Length: 333
Image 1: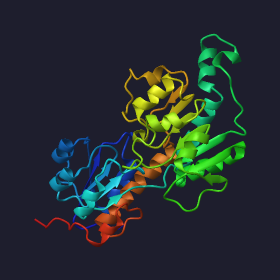
Image 2: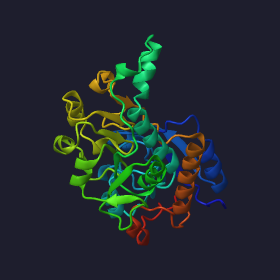
Image 3: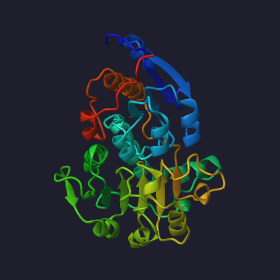
Image 4: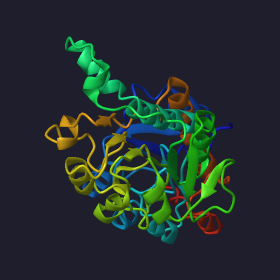
């Protein structure tokens, strides 16, 4: 990539990775300065990102007020897929493209979801804990049911949901899918409305973005429609599931178990009842992670920022209508 003459500044707004080697390489070749700050709240963004021409975002709330207070910013890049922390409408109004990396980590997240499902189906964590405590009794963890012949519902059949379907096809399960935004479902997946997905599934695995429509899609009413023997898997976004409702359903025996990689509050409260439930597996928002996926994500996020700052079209723009009326760069001097 050839250097850009104005030497813009990209600010990384907090990142849970050990270094910025990939970003430094990409921006160094492009002649773009790089800075790291910790910014999650409106006040922190406004206080610490005032000189930024672009933001690389892992966490936080990039609101209308932030965009109004950072007039230099010309691109917002999300480290990952979900952009629920960014006010996309406000960014569009201000001529700022919102860019994500929607096709990274697909295999990792799909594998993690299937691993949670299998671990809960076979009660592996309970068996492991029993063995470590000196037990050796397969029946102490309760009945284990054969997976073949059971029904798995996939809520969201995009890239990751489709990958899950491909992987589960080899387990002789019946696959149902619910996704109002696609016309073509993965091979072997029967499209059904949400009510049927809830009522017929032995396992439901969630693979949709967090939007106004999907927030608390799994609330007390929805969870109450699931089978008491059913298990819920969530590797998408915590806000899709009402945590209090889930805790209540598990405590009252309305659900048999849950596998959760994402939660409404992260990190999870150490006093959460979920951590004391034998039928629940909780992992620390780790489904996306592999060394290869981590490096790929960081490099591609940086490359997208470079494209926009050089006046090129990004590969994955959430609000593509804005590309015809971009916020202009700051005046020299």
